[in-house]
Length: 401
Image 1 (cartoon, rainbow, N blue to C red):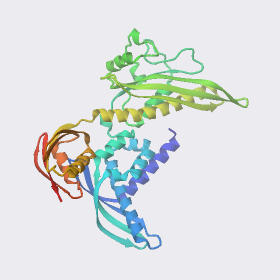
Image 2 (image 1 turned 180 degrees about the vertical axis):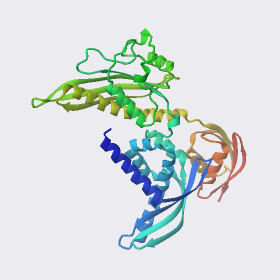
Image 3 (image 1 turned 90 degrees about the horizontal axis):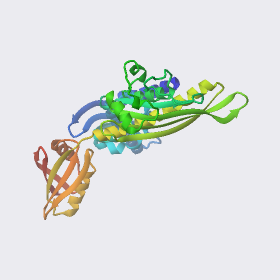
Image 4 (image 1 turned 60 degrees about the horizontal axis):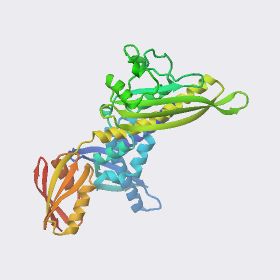
């Protein structure tokens, strides 16, 4: 990533954070155990041709976007947002409704050609984390796995691939590996620096080859207490394209896969190719390897983050007894409500009688969390009475309105 791009990214993020901090959120009210946060924000909309209703709608929409953005920034590492700033904005502006569990306008007024509103909004933290994680945006650096890179490298001048983990390793500048490492670190991952490992590392003969299989890579990773190994190869070579007498094209290619060392599961793979041009063959090979390594590292960072977040999510099995199910339509609506709630990973029908049903829910939280989340929900013509809560059990009555 160029210095110019980093400056633009940081400037864009700074402008966004300032707009959130100064113009929109006023104060956070509460964060409850149901995976939500309620905050007060202000939003504004411009009045065009005396259309106050449209300006009010715009002000509310801007306020809700601010609410979601403010909550998201609290748990997302800044470096991760910088790296995925475009994706972050697309999620924030394109899917705002998925994260708002409810809101109410506290006060509003027009001022000259601006309409302002103050809103109390409840934001789903669980939904935000899930979608941000699926998009490859790192949620928490502390939970990310430590990675060992085992990627060989060969350019047009090399007879054989070079690799750092041999018994008598070559001392060379591994451009693709360095680019991979930087891309992963920019996304918050801790990565072993192979240049420091060489001082004390003793490699067994069976690992002294450039094309390690999964089993060998996992063993080598475990010996260094790595939680993930990235295994693969990178190659750069001259292409047939020549511009004039001096400028040549160089093609860089990376093929790599990420493997979890404790289970042997493949977490994701990448195949990338990039063509560069240069008058200097050494510089051309180097640039091709570095650029393709950067792109490969970005893709692997997204895939590893999404896999790791999903793998570390744990749920609680909660049995829910629902009374008042003689009105089947109400029960179907209620079951759909639970199924679509943030934090619900799985729902299964266990038993159904004349006026009672039992369902099993795999939920990321306690029964108290689930009950609290249900109390924030509303259904047309249906009331919810939660009158018994235990460590793995809820009893609920549906009341027809």
